[in-house]
Image 1 (tube, helix red, strand yellow):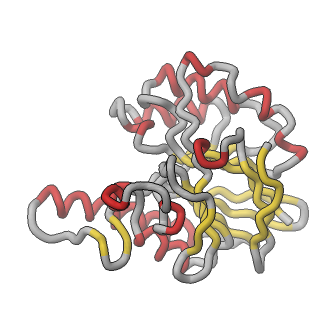
Image 2 (cartoon, helix red, strand yellow; image 1 turned 60 degrees about the vertical axis):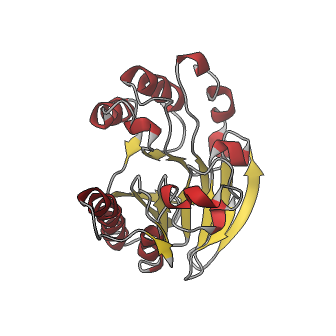
Length: 247
């Protein structure tokens, strides 16, 4: 069994320096890898990214991250990414990372994702240029996720996003904002590529557990939902079973 720890929406800034670290020192006792599902900073500044890098650097397990919308707010995502990578984090945007864990291989593919809505109640690339750009970005990002997942030849595949691939994990959020919390196109990418688990954040008032239409388990690991430094899930090639829960 591969043990995957995950959390999102930690929203760190200088005032939160040192908050996460005590709960992370022994993460290897519970997990083989730690996934960060975006919104690592509060406003996407380089200084905030340095706090994140310091909190998660030199851990005894690999740390894999995607950015979230907060991490883009200061319009410096490339610089934020560079700071995180300098701290030893693996930051994905349309790429995959492969890890050997015991006699198994784990592949993680990551993108930020974007909004757009869900089947039957979603935006379409029609009308104003702004609307076409909105839906076009969602389509582009979902295609990058699909390509990254297809490129993984591993025993276990995990999709890591900030935005949700399903509406299930948004229950508790106002219906009016569902189109801004995720897209069914991300779920289609997950279902088409043999994933065992999809992990996301972003929905602070949502629900932890959901399923794609194809039956892949989805977990909303936004910290306001899991209320812990991370949750841990045990994954086998043929199935996923929720494991420990919170650290």
